[in-house]
Length: 229
Image (cartoon, rainbow, N blue to C red):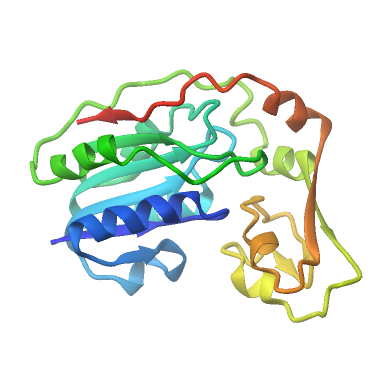
């Protein structure tokens, strides 16, 4: 039995997870529901975004608890750098890694669409039928990627609330980290932007800091999906 699990803030990883689940004729389960919600499966496909060349905390916790014999990763990123997340994900999971796909999508903080090339993803899906381990290569990671990532995220992106806020706290209900209440964020915020996209009044927005703008000005080098199969 194969199951698809995903975490998605801006919607990029959700689009990939839903496509994979349709092709496999199975459900796509939200990681935010917690690993205890699901039973053990034979093969798990885990879809998640890269944040600051790191695995989101909620995904790290999920991988540590997930019970599966085999696992495959479908990782989305903004086209600049995904760091060493595949190797790090392999270390966290207890299952045998059988394949991986690195999928460049629109960046959360840049204009871009959700379109991805389905042909190479179909090769990734086909590989799931084989229960053979693959070698996950070590990749270079920015030396500052692990330096206070939460603090850097809060400095780089400011969540702003306008007078249109009605106090409904849908932002808080949708937050995977319980890090916002009526537009006010805490130190646990990972800047996934789920609060901004879920606000029915459009009262939430974000402001990019100087360092983030410098980073985003880098040329997006890789636009093709990378497969490890």
